[in-house]
Amino acid sequence: MGVAFSSSHADQNGSRIVPCKSTLGELPEGCVALILEYMDPPQICKLASMNRTFRGASWADFVWESKLPPNYDLLVKKISDDSAIDLGKRGLYARLCRLNTFDGGTKKFWLDRSTGKLCLSISSKGLSITGIDDRRYWNHIPTEESRFGSVAYLQQIWWFEVDGEVEFPFPAGTYSIFFRIHLGRAYKRFGRRVCNTENVHGWDIKPVRFQLWTSDGQYVASQSFLKGAGEWSYYHAGNFMVGNGNASTKVKFSMTQIDCTHTKGGLCLDSVLIYPTEFRNVKAFLNRS
Image (cartoon, rainbow, N blue to C red; front, side, top):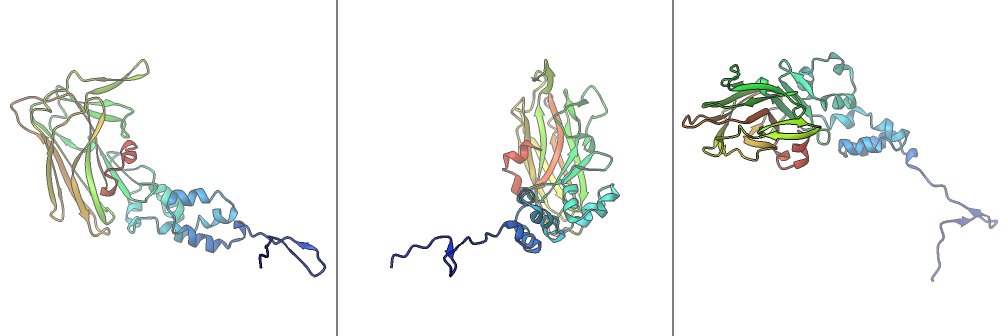
């Protein structure tokens, strides 16, 4: 009893034998691919840098097909770049994670790199805005703070109404719609961000009303006062569900404040965001939107 075991052994002649140590590189590539299939995309990409076996396994089509939305073939049709058809599943995943523009550059969709969930954004130029053609009320101003390169700036108006719609093959799931809004006008001065809030008024008197409708009969309405001058805010218009990802869903939405007893102004409207409801409270996601 009390015999101690060492990590080395001796042969019949008393010579010491050092056991062979297997390495991860000796694992069959197919086995590694089966393991990677259960990991999320960032983990797969990280492990691909370990050695040649993991790198090869990380290119297996079945690994990345499990990360793509079930209706990814419909999403590919929205991409104007025909070369996407010839990409492997890993290349296709990377391509869909880029900002993909459609409808004349007024809309963009992409897959979240970490989850493969679909997100969509509609620029202010892709929305129907009352009075947008009258520069006494609205102006499109360039800015680096928008992924579309410009925002719609409201100086002052009595009747505030913004409408929009999109028809898209959303993968099955629940989605949230948010308006990305900034009270005040931000600009650079001596390399520093400055916000002019002198035209901000009227938003604390009556709330703004948000509504959404879907082609299958869903309807949501809510209202909120606009506040927080000087920073971008996300105002929730509502949620909608998609049951069939193989068919396009039409979604209409609006933001209104049509009480003409007072004027309102000093507002920047950047875009409307549509993304999975599970992301709603993820601050990091909002920061990169």
